[in-house]
Length: 441
Image 1 (cartoon, one colour):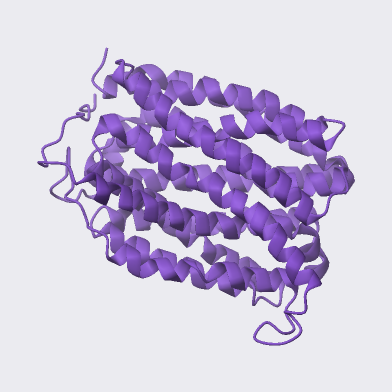
Image 2 (cartoon, one colour; image 1 turned 90 degrees about the vertical axis):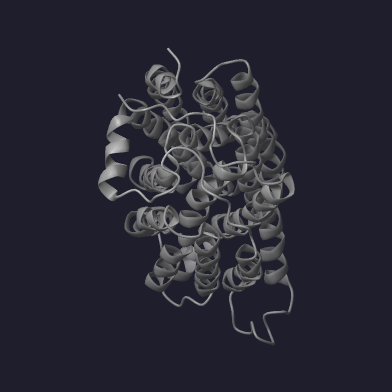
């Protein structure tokens, strides 16, 4: 059996809280910028379809296959680098590449060019999350890690909400003002100008990441890098816990990406809303309930952990996500937009609860020098399934099963409701082996 990862550390005094929370703040800002870009594209479904003569399936591929290609090729090697070299530098470089590719999305003149720029945009999240979570585990003691990870993952719904609200307003302003008639953006379509505008701020964060303090690595295997063979051995030793954990959390991202890719289009097609209405209403739901759900996941995990529940992150995630399936499956079927939003509120809360749980749970059972690589593998898998399956299946069902774009509500309801019981069952299989790895019975 694998050696449990002790909750104690041998790295001396922990870094000061100010340094620790500075890391969280910068990672959160990077996440907001990344999510802003990835969310705004969901408000441009119809303009992009018209510009490049796309159907729903082809649009979904921009958010699924494009991201999946980069994660498959580069995420795990980047995690390997983060387990060996300074993580702050790796995050800074990746953020610079992300920003440049985001700007490049607005310069695309064909579907293939746009597709390739969306491949490059994946560099941001593919690097910042695994490298950042690894750094967090060296900044925060185990009993405080859940809240810190929860605070970081609150930034995702904030970025999504900002993208929905500000993105909708930005697109509306670009479409109705004269700003695209003259100047640097003259001749651009509103969706193109939006990508250029929202990609630039990420470049301002690059020097701030370079100024971060790189903490000493702590815990098991903290002093020397591990070989690939040793990391594979760690995965095998912990497979009874990690395999169902990874499978269960894949269901979470499947639902989350499905929500954010297709919910704005559902409101526009079902209730005849414009992008501003859909972005503002759904964005407020995400901002309020998404951030609250992410914080709640970390807070409840720490609370149960202090009471001796070694499998706290897995149980908080599993029980919360069941409710997401119920409310999320009902939301698209409601007869009015008000009722749909009322169902979406608890669904978005509960869909964000597992993210802090997942990030915390992995760091607590994996040795230090393997954390970024294992987290990168986790990010790769959940992204491939989440983006590759969820949004694409909705597009396929709408195009080839219901054969009517207006029936997207039924595709969305099915794809959101089905994963919840699957996720609960998979995490239930992980509870006992996870407790053993934490040092329990």
